[in-house]
Image (cartoon, rainbow, N blue to C red; front, side, top):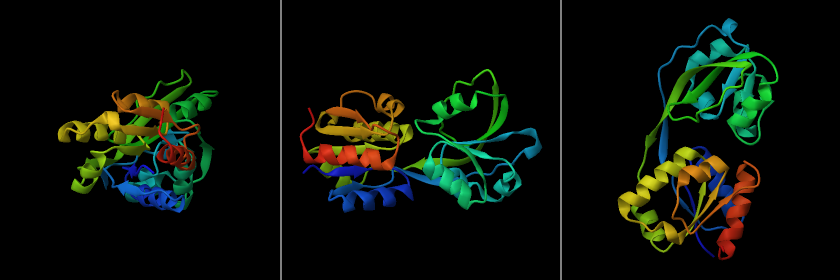
Length: 229
């Protein structure tokens, strides 16, 4: 069985790692980012119809400024982000499936002014004609390096699961910096944009059938157990 490498930030890394171990997989890797809060000021909630949120990190690191916005419904990229919003005291208006752009397109059925809360590195969105978006940055990701142990293991290849475009880009940097061979590694990615950002040269690239951790890890399990074609 090929080893599985996970590189998403905490607390997601530990959750995915435990799920993968319960599936019988040999798990390696570590977060390639440390998430840190940044100072920001919340605008008046009266100016907006809702919040657009693409990561649960917004609610983990948004701080006290979030308390000013709890009247606004959260339009969340996925279930994990929606759950984090509820725990922070927000109501969830709509939960997406398939990425933030798909969610925004669905919301474009009516005129809305949305406040987007995001990290420094974020997806560029195409705005429907009916929607205006103002953005506030509430956190940023500090890059981390591949550990020596992971570098030694990756020399012989394996399967890497990627939950975000930022992780894909960071992985490319680390592979190039350490002279690791992409052709020995199978990638499993959570969506088409992540596959695009991962670049070329990998042994194979596979996109999960749905953008969830369970779907991603199920595909990773199949690749760990068989040789990818």
